[in-house]
Length: 241
Ligand code: F6R
Image 1 (cartoon, protein in one colour):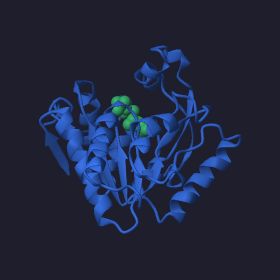
Image 2 (cartoon, helix red, strand yellow):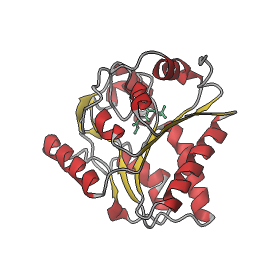
Image 3 (tube, protein in one colour):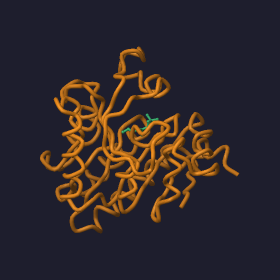
Image 4 (cartoon, helix red, strand yellow):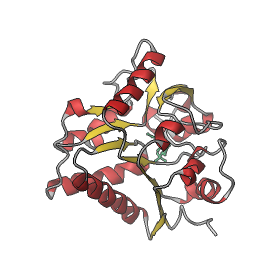
């Protein structure tokens, strides 16, 4: 399902509304979360809904990815991002939130434990996704097989440049590696919800949605999922047929 919104704010509010619907409807909601600039407006909308009564108390969350290596309390970590953008503003139970540990001494062991934790929680009910300029979902840079699981990956230079803002605009300072759920991990979620906004995403959104499904564009994997929704603003949808 492709949902077109007139502008970025409407797209992000629509995403937040769908997340809230899922949270209200599921007895034991397990949310997969994403970070990045696009999600800031989604989280702002969710915080607003929390102030109007939406509770996160029953939610369990798993984030897609974290830089490696990075300390949890490093302000540039995704742990810090989630705390700042969402967790500290809502009634979520901190012990029920989880991101890959960017300070894990044994990343392979951490990745296995992460997969186990998702399974033990009953799997992800709704996974929120952004899309990178390389077509990545999570940090699944091309090529990423659709059966990949949580693992340590190398980030593309384009992704490090895309994410340089948090690193004083010095892309060389963005970590070279990250821990990310695999495409297979993401496809296991019962529902997928992608949000893309802005003209810079138009080309990769077209590649993901209208060009062949390929491990060279991880986001094209959404087309193999029976319950995936993509919410686009008019700029990100600008090159669609
Ligand atoms: C972040 C993540 C990435 C971003 C993507 C878009 O957890 O998984 O896939 O969603 O890089 O980032 P923005 O929104 O900053 O363009």
